[in-house]
Image 1 (cartoon, helix red, strand yellow):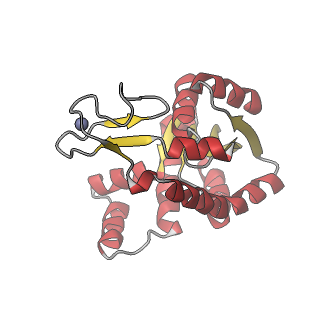
Image 2: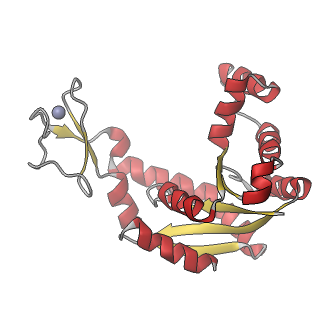
Image 3: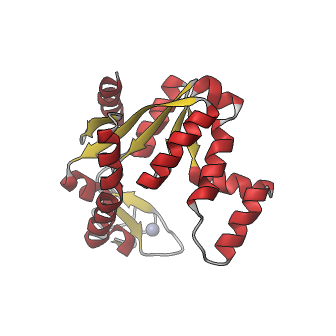
Length: 219
Ligand SMILES: [Zn+2]
């Protein structure tokens, strides 16, 4: 019986980095439903063909298809011995119910659902910090928090003006955080009720420091 972990967290919280550190240290396998979908399509498996068809028609991939894929993956040997960090599933309480059955079926257990929380201003600052070179032939990318150009607003490489993409604007960031709140609130309630929710706070410090806090929360 292997331990399965689920991490929940808003965009900009550093979930990917923390997940990588967690897997590197514990040996847990990172299982992302997005990657599973791409793998199935590349293999031209029965599920892969179904998914391609749905995408071609512009239809949503049903919970049943995702659950079948997750069931297959969690039943594999490497997961049985190393456990995994499940990424992208569950997204809804219906999927959370499905996960329960999948774990029973594959002989695994949900060790914890980790909720990574952070100060809203920090998240907005991170989500809006990217700047790109306005010269499309150059395309250099900067970050005003972590990868500043030598001269503010000017590309180091070609001297063109740096601009903010609309994807990185404050209004987009606020909207993304709102969507996250609405989608995730039911899951938070679900796992709080089941006693499996663990909370950790991500601060504006080195990722390793946040990872230590995460480990303490899980311990
Ligand atoms: Zn440039």
